Image 1 (cartoon, rainbow, N blue to C red):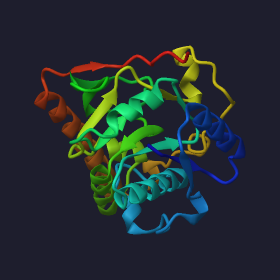
Image 2 (cartoon, helix red, strand yellow):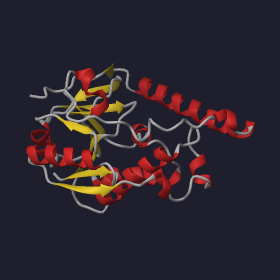
Image 3 (cartoon, one colour):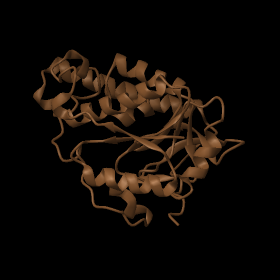
Image 4 (spheres, rainbow, N blue to C red):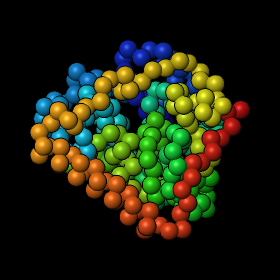
Length: 256
């Protein structure tokens, strides 16, 4: 299975890290040039960007469009791909897992990562170490995507924007699974799992200010808040629809 590495041109240290990591693991890969905040299209003034739960920051919009580039490549192919943000750290067992799942049928998406939050997990897959993922809450740094799943994500993205991970987490039409144990973590959270981060990193999203609802007119604030409440309500219904599922954070597989 080939990997698609999402990488900003100036993040040369991250690209070098990914090249070394993927070569060491024996995984073929291609680079996708990340969209920059300055090249977001349509521009953030377009009405499209006002359809989420709050105003989106330029870096968040750029990240969504970057993932969408990967989704289009997968949608136009006939096989799954591993999508990696350039700060994702893979565990040594990842290649064996990829080889095991790439020929399985009836799968749209597999999350490889953990990020400090519990997930709603169902039954274990009969042929691979993963569990049915009914509700995730965050994370789009390392995931497998099949063509059918890519087309579903692109259809959602065309209707309304979101954070990239938020769009995946809210895509309840995806047949999603979670690697268990997990096989990836982002550089900024490695220490939580007793993994020494291979390089230092800063977030290109986290370093920018958050958009404020207080700056909007009352009608716009009401629309954003209604969408937020609706999303929370849907997550609650998702939990009720799967009473036998458990909410827990998967363990991260050994880095050795």
